[in-house]
Amino acid sequence: MPLATSLAIFQSCNITGVPKSTRCAILRDMAKVRKAERRPPLNKTHKLKRQDWAKKYLKTDFSKVLWTDEMRVSLDGPDGWARGWIGKGQRAPVRLRRQQGGGGVLVWAGIIKDELVGPFRVEDGVKLNSQSYCQFLEDTFFKQWYRKKSASFKKNMIFMQDNAPSHASKYSTAWLARKGIKEEKLMTWPPCSPDLNPIENLWSIIKCEIYKEGKQYTSLNSVWEAVVAAARNVDGEQIKTLTESMDGRLLSVLAKKGGYIGC
Image (tube, rainbow, N blue to C red):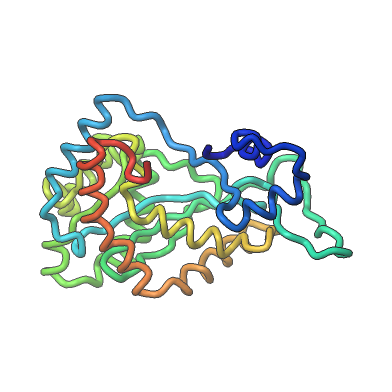
């Protein structure tokens, strides 16, 4: 009974009259409270495209793939609230409540083999359309990282990005092609597939670190500094574990006939 209440679980076992505190104490030995994961629905076309993608890249050397993505971090965390255990006699910490949420910072990064590229901060107030996205890549990824790589590295690297409008537009595709990232060097990406991008797991690691113990931030600069510090603490072995998970992800997609790999 995923996401059921303790009362519903006990009632399904024909057990009544047990106090909530006792029910929770018993359940903690065998389960834990979690929120449902949010995912876009997959229709038949989506599943077929995911299967085609998995078949196409099944024999790919994923150590040559640069996985990229953006994430937004806010001052108060993903949910704007926090909960956790507090000792008896202790008061719950006070959390700031903002009328407009305080805004957030958009962060771009990439991972390849055991290396983290970035993170790079999108300038506050900039909306990433095709033109600003390409200019952002030019100023950060290309000038600060890619140009330092050898010719053989550039020849073999495959660039992955999702199908956000600013990424997949004709303008951006043509611009990347002029940079030499085209055809087989630009990975095709199936729709509705965040579960296939290992950098999503990196975002989870960073967010768990910067928002641990319900931490909040008072400025966009301070939350950005926290992101940078958390990223620095992610070592090469952690990144390698993520990028080396791709063979298993592809096989899971095929085994589940295009379904989400976590289901």
